[in-house]
Length: 216
Length: 216
DNA sequence: CAGTACATGTAAAAGGTTACATGATTCC
DNA sequence: GGAATCATGTAACCTTTTACATGTACTG
Image (cartoon, rainbow over all chains, first blue to last red; front, side, top):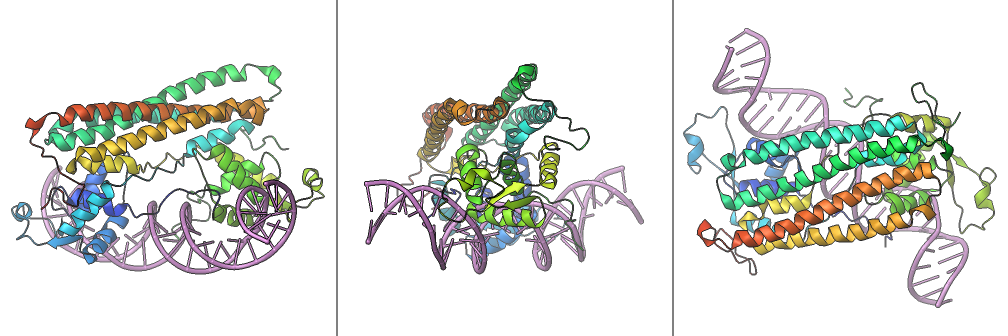
């Protein structure tokens, strides 16, 4: 077998975000996409290209069921723009979702391109690493701003305190992660200043403005 | 016709981790895999199934070049177990790596299964969420332990202070992220206790030991 | 002499992204 | 009437994982 454990179980998690959204009430593919964009996009995102086929597949498996206007009172009232295909969770679908939720999660396989660039940037001029630190700082601050706003609007958007607790939990995670990144990026930018001011190290500055680098 | 122009390879970042490892000296596919496992696996990992084909492709593009025993003095000495195919970076390959390193990174698309489960776990008994918090706590602590050990061994494994600075930077990131997760998980486990002790909320405990849940 | 670590690959399948195609309705 | 938004989908392509296939050499 493999000695290098890969880790990531490829278990079609798009299914579960669709089931999860549908568990809160009937929704169309577009509704699911909007819900994902508005509430989970900072830790999970999906595109149309995956949501619609998934919905179709779930329907084929009997985990969701398209419901006509008759079934879903809330849409019939508004003269819908176009034929809007609403789906509801079936009992099988709810069971499937709950089984998945009750199972230990698969740890995320980290694939952080920023760290990958930082890791190898020792061969280049320190300004390159600095750029990455600064980008990381800006993105952390942008995330902080966004998540703070999201938390403020939370009570209005989610009246149910039961659901709100868990939504808030994910926001808190995002906030902590963003603060950690912010602090890190600031520290690293500072440490880099100190690091480059020590010429006896033997590192020679490499100009990257043109094309050349260590090799010549 | 073609949506993906020849120039903009969207991600394919496996190329760069291979180039990056090769930039530090000749290595075989297995060497690259081992290097990835030992030093970047907490923020980037690759399997054999991707490294070998990538190496081949890079060779076809002239970015790396297989080098015989003649070229690489360090391997000829040890009676190698098997034909070990070493590669070196070509000047083109070094330029390609440096160009990529000097470019702003693509922000990571977060896909955090733990948060996804937490997000939807409001429909189940709080013990389910608690399990996820506890798993997150344990994993953060395990990561902390591992990264602390990694940092201690760092000076021995990487004598070059130039490279060490950036390696250490990635370790510090991991430590901060793990501490953030640890704190979060502890807070959430506590907050959950307080949350469930408020029966007037209207939430009814749902037993998940069997099969049933909200729907019934 | 069996098990483990070293070592190199291929093939198939699953998963995910992007571009394209189409059409209705509302707002300006 | 044009732009934006709502709305549903398909096709093509790329990336990543997993299983498989093969073989050497060292260790106990």
